[in-house]
Length: 86
Image 1 (cartoon, rainbow, N blue to C red):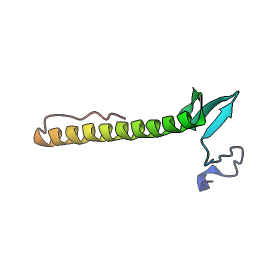
Image 2 (image 1 turned 90 degrees about the vertical axis):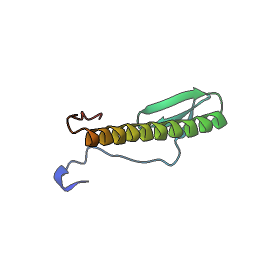
Image 3 (image 1 turned 120 degrees about the vertical axis):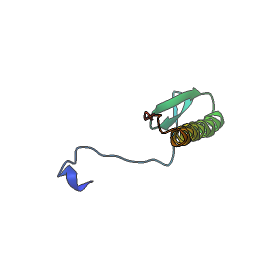
């Protein structure tokens, strides 16, 4: 709890090491953005988690490369103004 929160104990957060779960015989995995699935087997769900993580990392790297490119272009031509992407 942050010092600025006062005595607000109404919200409880937890973390689970296991992101995979089975619901009605189908497999899912949990992310911050929501649950992904269904997948027919646990092994396929695990493979999809790996793919999901790789895709997210690639997206972050792409965004950083675009930002670096825009920064380099602005340094070369100070007449260009940058607009934040986030």
